[in-house]
Image (tube, rainbow, N blue to C red; front, side):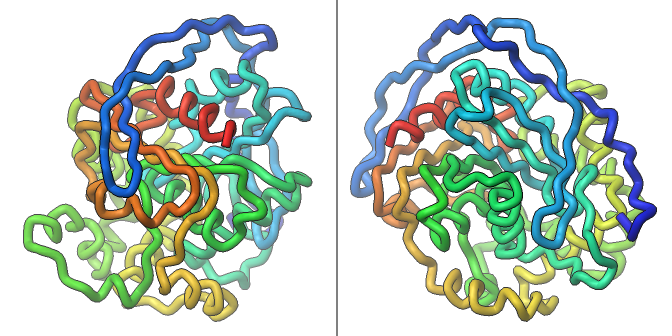
Length: 351
């Protein structure tokens, strides 16, 4: 959004917040424990809130280079959980996760990433970079703006990568992370390595975005594009038109196309990064380990590109657990399996 004339089309959007004293029930799901690369099935319990909630308005806060739009739920003095969405999704991926965590006593913060919803840049001169380290810096800036010393950070897609990066670079600020699809820290150098043809095919949109035709096509058809990605990434998720439209509105942010195109071009080394982030990118290029308590999640029907859990288990040097969430669960795991995602946040907070 541009200057003082920032559009406020999301200011009236309401977000679910559970009332105190919500009731909870439990159910069983299948999890996996990973230790030194070994995977063992075991049952684990999921907390499920059944209480009706109230609604609260979207908030805005100046944080770093951004005016961040976010929702907040739960007690202000509870342990903080920051929930980070991915592309092409938005904060509504956590509609059902948020009340579950709030009812369990957590202070829940769910921000729009740069280029989404009501989040805007404070200056027209700030580079519209989408490189992963920028989103991690945004998260730290948001924590500083809200006086949050330490938080559990949980996300999927771009949000999972951000959680990994924040934990690797600022471990003292992170109590634990929940990362869908595991260790996603990469670099431009790593992005030069070709993949087998079948794996490359899954990244078709990245190569499309590398062209000006792709940029123009995404700008013109961003909602159709997003809906296609939703269906490919979560082939068994029967979302309705209203659910999609609610999230797709966040893609109308005027910086959205710039951020998305830069993100994928940067990964391929086709776009320069923000020079102020060079030092952080150099650290990330070493593929640093994550030392904080971590739970990684994977849906059993994730149609998006994702690594095998055995490939990244040893990247987590602290207390670590991997869970496979069954039932036709795709890429947007917190929206498709909110009980499993919320329970992972609760469990990782125990250290």
